[in-house]
Image (cartoon, rainbow, N blue to C red):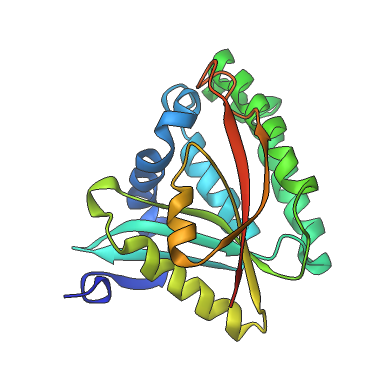
Length: 215
């Protein structure tokens, strides 16, 4: 039996799939984003929806009636999407740092969020900016790993080709499963210090990576 026999790959439905997507997000990112996950009610769901609104294709891998993994792909460096993505990102930051949703986050969580946003900026200005698609979010529930990431990435690569692209990129770091991308065939094109986890991983040296895949 292959992963394709286990999972149904289909479009992400926020109403139907949010609980499964949240579990996948927590499984993948709790160790680096625990202040946001544990001390800001509703922030995880808003992060997922923000990426979904920035993206052009969102997939889930469903098994036993629940979304067990999620991949959101976008075109963040295409001019026709750039302004919209900036507006969505600024709106998210405003909600949680200055707007109405800030009351749902403890001060420590807001300080961590500010650091994460600032710490992720190098991924933007160090990006090769070649015409490509981009994996904005990829994660899965821990107990379902072992092929789930590959089948979701296969769906995104197929979608990217159908849109006329010959390259796809992804930003990750040394605290995440960067080796998955190398096993898939991505090549590392950028490497630099990442300060996004100053509060969640104090004293840890984290390296940011940007990978590219010819498709």
